Length: 171
Image (cartoon, rainbow, N blue to C red; front, side, top):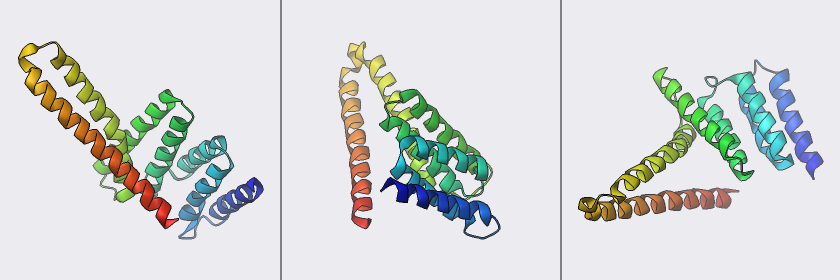
């Protein structure tokens, strides 16, 4: 039940806080996020905020970017596009900052940076398409561009489904 998730989350946070010098303290603390997500979106959002305040972005760049991505996804699930967009901006800025500082970023960090960049690419595609609509000389190019755009979106959505399915199979 919810009491067990909450108790587990609190225990993981307590370990991370009580034993800050242990090598696994940050990783154990971070795992509380999954438990808080099982309790409620509000508790999970608050936890990821606590995590980022406690560990910042450089202690474990992957976990920091994952925390931001989980916040974005929770806001998106709640139907809060402004907060979702703000978190995606935060992911992009943090990723760029970490890269500039030469911090190592693993697969998860790159995946979430790509997720944030997707939104910007989609907006760019739409702007180009809108500019091409009014120009009859560009009709053939516009149609090919639209095909490419649809193929890109289909590929992106298929990859997301594949990743989600792989996660389900691993659980």
